[in-house]
Length: 357
Image (tube, rainbow, N blue to C red):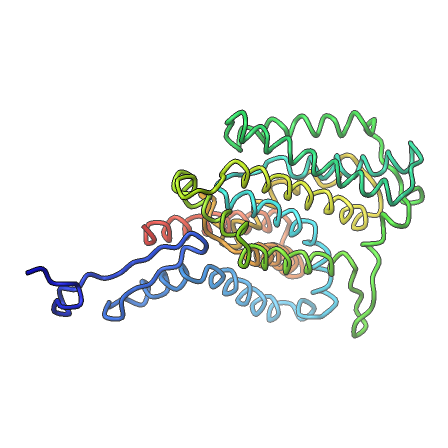
């Protein structure tokens, strides 16, 4: 007579490992005996934010001890200002990486969008509000182009966006004639996100507020909507998602379009951050956005990660840059440290992937 699993002795019962699409959650039977390292690994697998939070807290404590000026509210505001563009681009990058893709063109799209805003307002003479919207539409269009190449031409995201990186950057230089729009000629609305308000004697900008609100919005969307669930499903296993009835190409296309929208808004944020419109400012943000996503615990292989992890990853980059600078270290060592963090984050991700299988 066949016996169910519950009829078997304790030592013969199979342990249960259940992997979910959305967060890569893992459930382990209560009888399993884990070493301290295994316990930590399981917790990190089920709660992806543990690692980034731990790194950030340790860094804050260490740098506050090393440099008395580090732990001030003013320095914290400065760190937020420095990482807000990276963080916003990181939202777009996270959406794409969650689908097991990557976007190497985010910085080029941002530059093209801001240059378009400047051209429409300053050269063409359109109303500033319309110019702002059109610049964001340029970002959406670029995202749609990336999505079309990936979904309709079946070109891998890495190759597709590597190609559009060059195309969008060339268009950016062509449209701008390689010239910047100085602060004096930039309409006040374009610089509005760079203005701010004072809290406890420290200035915070509207750009910082917008960045935080965007993270809250997309954290909610990814956790509480069908679209968010589909994004995780596609990244976790594309074929399984397709067989389950998810319109994979539609999901991928929507992700690239929404990413383009976010990048277009980030172009507005960049203008407020630097106070001018430059066709070359912000080119380094491309790799920085990927860095924030990876350090924040999102898997480069898709299907696992949290949008708030990207915010933490951005803050970690800013904290290490600020802390090492205040401690007297050269920028060379800042880059060195960030490189170590990237390698460490990917190594942890690889380990967690093996555990989750």
